[in-house]
Length: 608
Ligand code: AGP
Image (cartoon, rainbow, N blue to C red; front, side):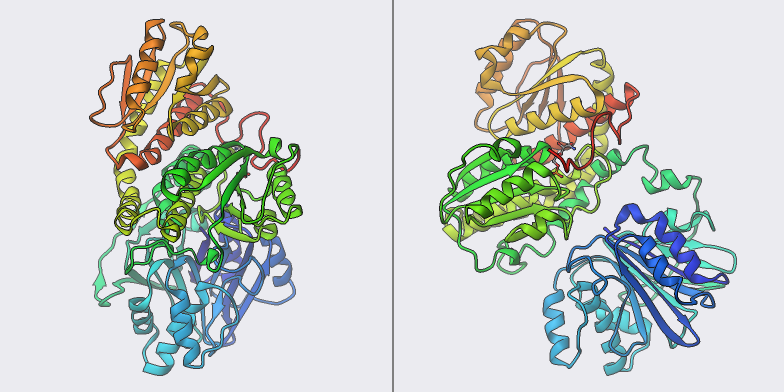
């Protein structure tokens, strides 16, 4: 997730753009850049790191005559976060500059085609392919910028929100979207395009929400929207926004945590992007090309990331026929783990900076066992020290309580189990194709199902807000999710909660059960359903209230039945997870806790 802004008006464009980028820094901040046209010359200033580095560079030039400009804060997905890969990118003619948010899935094949036509690339990014392709159509086919954009996008597969301008018409700026957010801000004698409202909220509250395949031209005194496919004009009307900047950065939600929970459908799309071959319907993981299937996998992680790894263990065994050991990193690092040649250590970390997880990574390196890092931050220490990296592409996760990161880790791990299952022949191509079809259907199902789940979470949270302790119970792949549900409730509502394998209750914990000790049971339609039902009867026989988070059609008699939308039983976890997150969220809100910055916690635990 990156931040883009474009401006055409009467003010010094670079000042407006930098101010807008500051308001978009929560969307990505590993590098930044601006482009503007001054004295008919295209100027591009970019820098690695935070915005202040870019401002220092700008202070050494005089960019204040330009009244049209664009800017970008990057959350790298392709190409390390450095100046060379920072946006804006230019085409080789030096007439075009472009900024982009999204993932171009077929950028490598387009890049090959352009290189064969003599185009020379300056970066590793998918974005530069976009601007070179547009420039190539202008040069080779003699097309206008508008037509060249349309022609280029016919060839592009993937998600994008982009802004582009040319020195030919320095007061015109074009922008277009497909799957990534893009808005138009309508001012007096000035117009804006941006990824999100905060970027221009200081100048105008009149916003046009653009839809997929809508191409907009902004000039200081006019704007016009077109269908990017046929260039037919499209009628759009501005809406008046009443948010303040802070709430606009959370897309109007009260907390980043809620915004990030609701981003999970898009996170699944982004994590799948470019990793399923549309023809063969097989998993394609370029990052692992040339690497043998490991003989055994050791997963090492902390907290929520550990729960994602433990959840994946069930699928590695079931689908890939692989033996998997999952360890909490702070234990792994002080044991004498037996790691053998041919094995693989998989470290999972959203931040890529967790000290215990890094220690586990370094033990593997010392023992000469390769490491696959599954992380969300390009250029993070885990990414730099791993032999292989599988990025989760979830975009920045601001809230301390990790939500969308776990969803993206689960997607990456499921892809990995299918990838290795394909290689070992432990999954048939029919099964693999079905699993991928079900995965691809998740975002739409979640988009439709989450609002109803949110309502149920809110009412259950209020009903059980007096509880001082909870059990979270699950069996099979629901056991790690029970651990995660307990962690979420603990860390943001400060209510004690224990996640347990349901079969363990009779070995002691059931002694705690009484009417004031509710149990949250994950009762999806897996092979252990009957066994779990008898575990819950034991709990209810002792007066313990049970909330059953279950799937349609599952027979269960409990105090509160919470039914999540129907989905392939193997992937029910993708609905169980947001339900648990929403329950914890609504409980914390109801109890008046600081949801995004819970007491005693840090977003990334970079010390032991
Ligand atoms: C989860 O909500 C917590 N914020 C915490 O457990 C976190 O998952 C853990 O510290 C690991 O962080 P990482 O994924 O960045 O390594």
